[in-house]
Image (cartoon, rainbow, N blue to C red):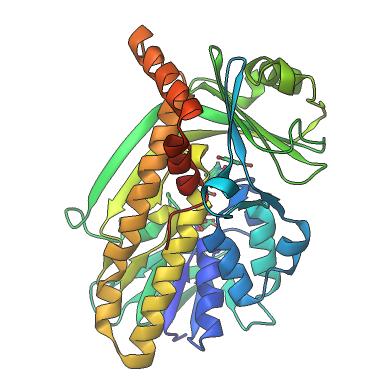
Length: 390
Ligand code: FAS
Ligand code: PHB
């Protein structure tokens, strides 16, 4: 098979890029290791920045997002009894975020693939990238035991943190930046109404908690747990008990308990691989960077990467403008690093680190005091949370 762009990975980055390229008449094929059901079974992000919403609008795939997404104009930082509301709309001149599950966004993109002429090959095994340094890269894979090959001009690595694309870049070419956190997030999804109409991020002496949601009848909660913990150590009741303590009495009074539809522990890391382009290979999304979910940036960074990549590829194929491709990495990384900083700093502020002593805790209290009393501090948090300009 021959195409212009071979996209590896049919998560949000790969599907968004595929649709954007097809909308511009650029030929592409998406290769995905898993089945559609498996991809949809992964419960991940829940908060969309304007860039992500705008891409769905641009594609005309935002009907369900508009109908079911929950616009949020603020969120809360809880520190013991204190609740600090960050009024993101007031502080950013009317911007907001939309609560809409990554699963639903991925479903919207998947369901539109046929009508938009986007070919996605699921259950592609042993995807391997070849000759990405040159101008005639190709990708091999197998499906139903049959060896296949796709010749292309560009490969877009949208295959997440553990995919083959970043690994196809020879050692020594790029630089890795990594910070691993000494805890993970245990997430629970349940068909119960949220305890609060806005998100609450809580820093409690027992640890971090987050009250989020997917709709007015479906809630998403998290507590941080030591990396030694296993999901089986956390029966539902234990999770609900811990959430009630960490979120504080006011929120706890409104927690409705129910059976977990999904419960999993995700490790937290900050990671960047630079550059995000090597020869004919562009990296987008989690294949190039990971943020701790504290700042709700992961999915939205994938969206901004894809926005830049699509812009560059349209220029490249339409006007044979090679410079557009060469500028991709710097453009994407400029936004990635700012989101990495915000996610790292909010993680530092809202979690208890095992290595921290009284001084570090005093710094957290002082910073929360400052945020509570400073419009400038709240504005900084608000403009990062809604997403910095693209
Ligand atoms: P993805 O990982 O979503 O997609 C990559 C795709 O590539 C997958 O479908 C995978 O199957 C496929 N793939 C991998 N290897 C392949 C191969 N060899 N061949 C073909 N295909 C291959 N972000 C937030 O903003 N908020 C959150 O709360 C949040 N929670 C998260 C929880 C977990 C457990 C994880 C892992 C991530 C979480 N994230 C969160 C971040 C997450 O939402 C990502 O930022 C987002 O999925 C990025 O999208 P992609 O870059 O498309 O990567
Ligand atoms: C979620 O709803 O899954 C969610 C929301 C905000 C975050 C992280 C996760 O910062």
